[in-house]
Length: 558
Image (cartoon, rainbow, N blue to C red; front, side, top):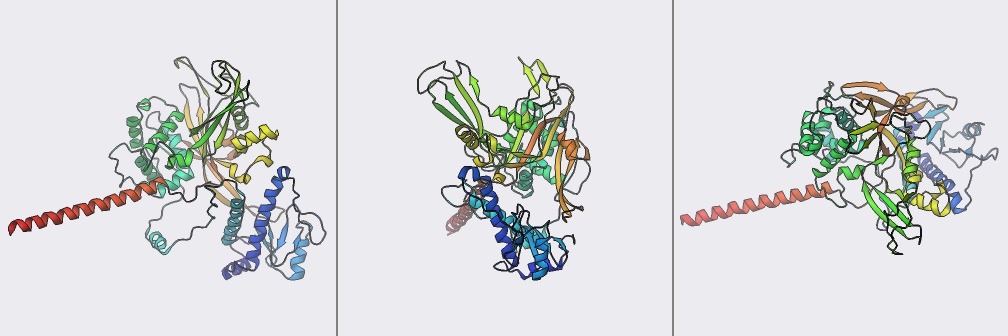
């Protein structure tokens, strides 16, 4: 490959800026066509419609991966060389792999890259997916995807802003058995939604009106320290003190449970966020972690179904196996989720049917995920407590979990369709594009040792790196994800294999394509606008009061 933006021909084409016609327009059209065709192929089982398959214009062979000329309507084989022959004979320059958006230049005789072309590819795919999605709000069309273009004011602000690193690897000091806190904070730091929120100055600790014990202020200070130029380990002392004051059950220097600290910190961030409410809150915590669970209870006698929807911030999953015993093959994240969403029998004293009026009837209960959050957090129940927690044991069995997770089979819509159609959560039962259900792993918390003398460590995804490699396909660029292991103040590079083989206690996944509600203003924006309006009103009242006092003083002298 000619290197990033190394092809003069693609640079000249992009420099013309002609998106209404020419090769760039053709590129967007064929990418959108491929996105529609891929969606139709996934739903063919449900719709019973035929899916059009492109053929090579030379040998008439079906093309599972079409290459299309960007100067005419020729489509041809890549392996047989027909598309290359067409480019030479017709003296056309560019062809595109519509599946991946890769562009081949016949003049350079190589695949070429340009950032603008990559933006056009993503925009075309996302726009087409948004047209197909079934998730609408108030019968209004979804807002179209638009790339951010800085305004004149943004340019001035960016020019005067201080440059800070966009990624940072910095350890946290152990302040006395506080590894449970350090691993959770590292997962917060590497959470892209939390990072963008606090680095975007959505909460400024210097302007906060909460006088003390504000967890949002502590998060703001934490991100400022991590993304500063300082490279030595940071000690989150004030964060720990604030946690002790707001969550007394976590106070003291004894070892605590990382999951309990995680939930407690989320509640503290929520309570100190601007505009937080107890119902339909869209603060940073609920915008990031909040989803909905649906519980369906069916009476075995009359078939009456009762559904209940409850909020969730994370999902706790049971593990198979006895404490101290290693069980192979039974504990994967997928099988744990299947057990979580499988029907279970309720005891005779656990259910009373509201329709047939009979108590003690047999009933079945099934859980499913009604609303998927942007960030999914899973806890594996490794610690088993009996009685008054005087007897506690740890389940050491290994849990296998993937780097990419598809949550569609565990959603309420798919579970309901699977029961009716007996499709077992097949691809044809998914509403909307499959990418709306895909999650990427970005952090893992591990617990090593026994329950009373164990130690917490964690892995976190650092950044995407582009590296060169050679292959027979001609492509020589690939996207790699770099992982790091955090053991308090020690930070070391890690491989994805070591991450997936670690003794996971908690896993964090982020959605590949984020959902959003159009025409909705976040609560913190409304809160800030109300505060500004109130401050102006108070200033106006003070000004009027001063004028009246001056007038009274003048009248008194007359």
